[in-house]
Amino acid sequence: MKKILEKICVGGMLLGCAFIVACQGSPAPLHPAVKLRVITTLFPLYDFSREVGQGRVAVDLLLPPGVESHSFEPKAGDIRKIQEADVFIYTGKFMEPWVDDLLKSVDQRKVLIVDASEGVRLLTSGEEGNSDHLHQEMVDPHIWLDLDNAGQMVNNIAAAFTVRDPKGQAYYKKNRDAYRERLRLLDDRFKKSLSQCDSRTIYHAGHFAFGYLARRYHLQYISAYQGVTADAEPTPKRIALLAQAMKNHGSKYIFYEELVEPRIAETIAQETGVRLLMLHAAHNVSKVELDRGVTFTQIMERDLKNLSLGLSCH
Ligand SMILES: [Zn+2]
Image (cartoon, rainbow, N blue to C red; front, side, top):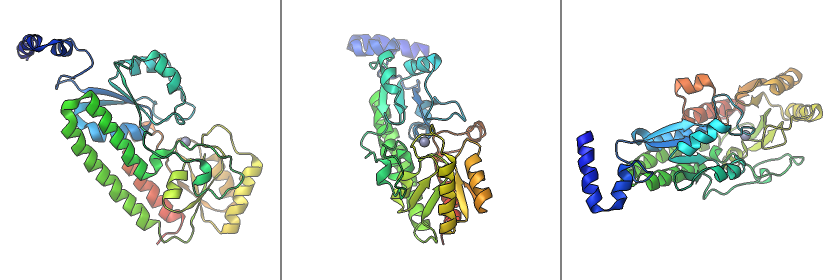
């Protein structure tokens, strides 16, 4: 193999300097035996990258398992990992505001920086089936919870891989199309399953994460936290209001978020007698989920099951 490579390099030198650069291990183009090194911030980006890149990429998830994503900031070691990657993918500036600073320490000739929200219409929390007038209006970063947006993010990822590894173009395109078809079928199931429900309001004990999902399937959405991040805890008054709204509405289930103790949901359950159901926003996954090889579509399928039960869909 080494001999073959040497021959290619010698031949390449005759052809021009682009080949010499490749033989010296410089960023582009990659040798076919070298996998594209990809690092992503959130779990959906990690999973989309695995689906699109499969055997041609090595994907790393920047967030350690179980870590809360909105308050995450990269440490020196994380920045080094990004500097060493071929492609760095983040959700967008509203999800990872620290990327602006990061770019100062990353050589963008070496690392392709990908804003996965490119081409996605960002919504404010006021536009998203939010029937709560007290809600503070903010740009909602949870774009991946609209499966059509997820498809656009997959497109962006495939395009980025092709820029860094042009020889893989047909491969990435095939994987992209196959995965987008799976997302489309899943979206169809959501539409069908959530079209006939006794209740159309999601009462959520977490932060405002499901606005895109609620809007896509014509649901109302009320979260205990008034913000699109998990930093301002709801007040006792706010929790009491939510409990009262659920009583008035005759709700049987409160949804709680992933990776944290469902303390607020339990408080509301004690007061109202409702039961708890998880609604996983997929920002990040636990160590157990990661080790089991959980996928984004599996998380969404479980959410659909819980939504169908919690909203009494038939
Ligand atoms: Zn969130």
